[in-house]
Length: 195
Image 1 (cartoon, rainbow, N blue to C red):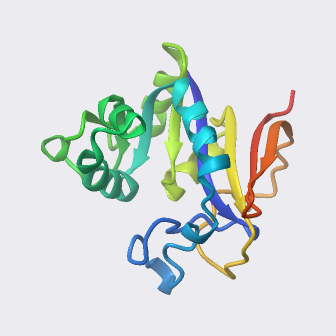
Image 2: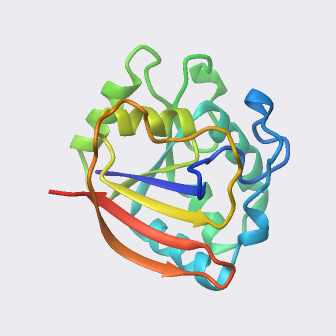
């Protein structure tokens, strides 16, 4: 499986709480829901649909999984929502327990989530898509486990917040696979590691 990161991202690289005011206020972050004003269903809807066509499973960190598991079951009846509800999900968490799992989800081993993710990557086909999950996404980037980045680069500078790109001094060259721009100024870009 290919690991694909899908992120709403500000121009200064922030991915924290794009979907809701109280989604993630860590560090005093007060811009929750910042991406809504830039959502363009004409351009972004097809990008989401295309990503889901090749997605065999989803991979989440604890916080994003909880937000999604609370939201998506109530949206049944829409083709995208139905796929989100039916698809297999894997969850990386040190605090959740197997009994907490719902929404067609499986908990990865708390003591070796990255090892389990490597195992998933080596088996099967299709994509293992990571939506949000900033801390997990950052670990995947740090460990060179990302096969594709699907970024919605939004025309806003947030001035601080969680980012997925490590500051470890390692250069990670990428190549552009595709790009389009929405009517709201969102740059929808796909990148893969170069070479």
